[in-house]
Image (cartoon, rainbow, N blue to C red):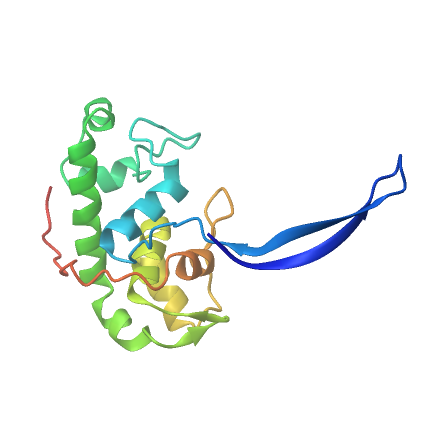
Length: 183
């Protein structure tokens, strides 16, 4: 559905005739509204990490849809990485468990920091959880407590600040903080 129009005139180079063309100002393609809930959060993060591919292993050895490191998987008693790559359900459970653990580790920093602006980025709970997925909860604590003066970048150049910004504003309240979360 066209919402408005703008006029333009073009000149045909061969005939020197002018033609009036009407262009739409904007077009409504009936794109559905996507909620900014936990499902949207995890899918956006997965797309950034692996383009949503459960079987990918990057050049540094990070695994699966959410690009888990081996030591993170071992925290959840996952040792067989080949089986992990073939098991989407296990990857989803591991992601949720990691979010729960990170939320527990960062609970005080979430309480202190959400709503503040650091380095031009409004701090949100989802941004904090995404940044913890990127760099680990300890690096996020350092970043927040230093008011952004102590940063982190992964081997590909992704930073805590970029994750705080890109993944901010999702409702992740469904995730309950739990230091003992398992898959």
